[in-house]
Length: 227
View (cartoon, rainbow, N blue to C red):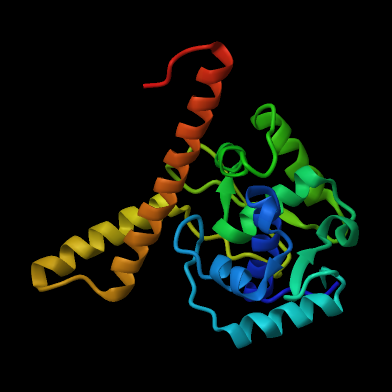
């Protein structure tokens, strides 16, 4: 299979995500798919794709048998065929979808981010599936080198080709914040610096939301009243 474009990967990730999170409206209409691609939360990077661009991406994915049109509906709806085409289990599909939607993450972050798509028993199980994806020929995931000052290495998908081994988002935001502060002394931060800060704040908000959901679930299972 050829490398996907970033928008094709976004479309595929959205279909996998929405299948698990909004099953009542899945398969997705074009409008729902477009909204999912341009969603502001739980996305990195945030994009503004047009309807025509999404249609082009869908047609390309249909040619690869990764997406097909649902039947029996007045409005054309789309669903993914990722597990069958790639020959991977549902747990691996969930991890790839999160990586396509949110960018490189550590195994611990992936476990939290994929909570609604697939519930992993622990971080070790996440790492096991990631290692299987990395061992395939061709590889579907890669473990990035651990950046100086970080405790864990991040993982990235390879459906769009090789990944530049960039510093983790936490390091990037520190650099952006420092640059923004320096720019503020001279006047104002650049648009790029502000975008980096907003993207990291959005990523942190998603992680906090996932932690809160996990805490609520554990409290319910233990019969404790959540505050």
